[in-house]
Length: 125
Image (tube, rainbow, N blue to C red):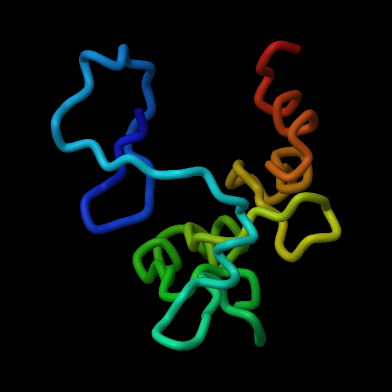
């Protein structure tokens, strides 16, 4: 089960649940490739979930986090701290998908290189 936050695409919780114990408010969905977020239907056209040009290229449209920018951006050395971004498949893709706020640990905590990410967070190593 995946529980999303109200009014958001953000995941609030994930857990395993037997099929007969599922709540009535389930929305069944199909799995589609991550790349589908770059071609979302919008009327007779398509649009990307992400900014496609400029300094915010690769960031989720409308994902500005003013409070995080003001309170954390200065010490994390990242004015886009907390803003949602595209998860690339290699280090050549777009933005570093770091999971640690320590500026010196960005590459080591990069989720795009899953083995390095797991090693950084000491999961199973």
